[in-house]
Image (cartoon, rainbow, N blue to C red; front, side):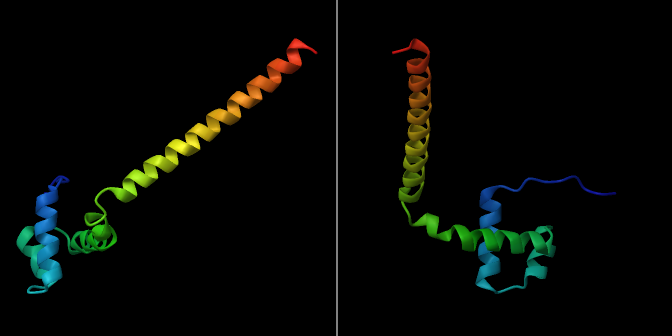
Length: 94
């Protein structure tokens, strides 16, 4: 009988992937012990490698992205308002 899909907590994932990175046991051994697929542990390791820099960023990168998104949204709104103004100026006549 097949087990249903399980959601693992972030703490569990961190524990498993840190053990995998440490290298005391193989990924296959860890997968058997924790009852997860070896490919899942590899995916968690990859996620750790890609996101590790974010641990030390203190939110600066996220703040910069939010500011860029805000600026883009404001420029879009300015453009929309200019189009509406020009349209209304044409409709009202000289």
